[in-house]
Image (cartoon, helix red, strand yellow):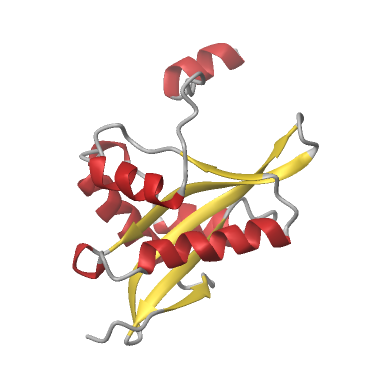
Length: 160
């Protein structure tokens, strides 16, 4: 296995690759019980009208070794979009080879090209290797902000 890798945007037919990486990430984060998305869900989200997100596949020797999935949000304070990185994953045996840093470099370039004011993502506090890596990039936590979420029955109850 060489150290060379390349990026390509996900295309129809890559749903199984994306779903596989999401499942691997969920297992790594001990959240498999929450990873219920199907290949059909990813097909709709990535390639439906309208597309709800974008994905990039990282390949080495013609084989997928990682991926990133993101979408654009909007900041009313800056009046500009932001790139929100939902997931990034690199196979364990390919970590430490510069792939993660290259993924962030590529996404930062895309964010700038799209006129984004910022790039954001979430990380589990317990994922010390990822937190250390993000700090090495210069990323800083938003300590005074706490993410809030409605889902499942509570989402339905608010909607009712």
